[in-house]
Image 1 (cartoon, rainbow, N blue to C red):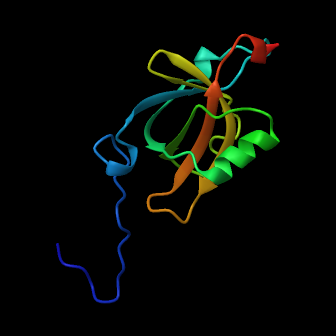
Image 2: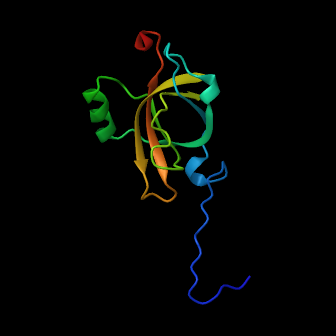
Image 3: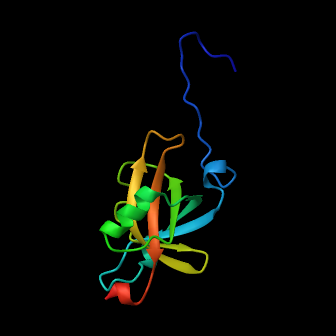
Length: 124
């Protein structure tokens, strides 16, 4: 396929499991129902990549008086796409979504989620 002179093409970003950015597994993301339980009807399936817990994130967690269990990055599809997500299931473990940071300048764009363990005490 030959391109015309002066025509620019967009680079295709591979956001599949084969991508090195999101190759650590599959996370299921949920909104919460009015009773505080995960809403199975709003489940979103996304590939994720593990991120490191930095000193900045530890300080962030102390400010909101919680502990982060893990940090994951998922492909960012649009601004505010994960604003209503409050719960994530990875494997057979359930996590609370504490913060979501959207990074549009990353290649590919990523939403970094800070997760904490889902305890019975935190749902009261």
